[in-house]
Length: 128
Image (cartoon, rainbow, N blue to C red; front, side, top):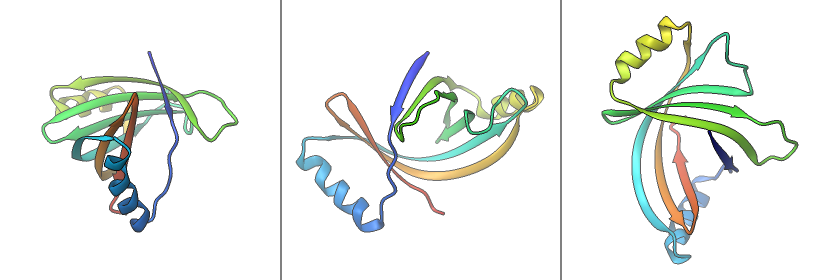
């Protein structure tokens, strides 16, 4: 079981551009840029607002992720995060449906990933 610690910020277009210009100046290394299609699932065993099951497609590869948020008063998320690569995303969708999970939200995003020391900085751009 992995523990993910994250803080999200909503940026204006101008702020996003400024951050992307500043990252290399402070020594961050650009790791990759990708386009993702994410499907969130709902089901009886998932607690809304606390646990998430997601199938993320990136090109021909995919990652299945389970997240469970730990109770906290902080606006910094602490959550369990278990992930595995999926060789056949279409088959995985069928398996999830057979197990009683339903696709509840599908969203796309462009993601740029940067590394600064031991910290991963992710800049997402969602079309909506």
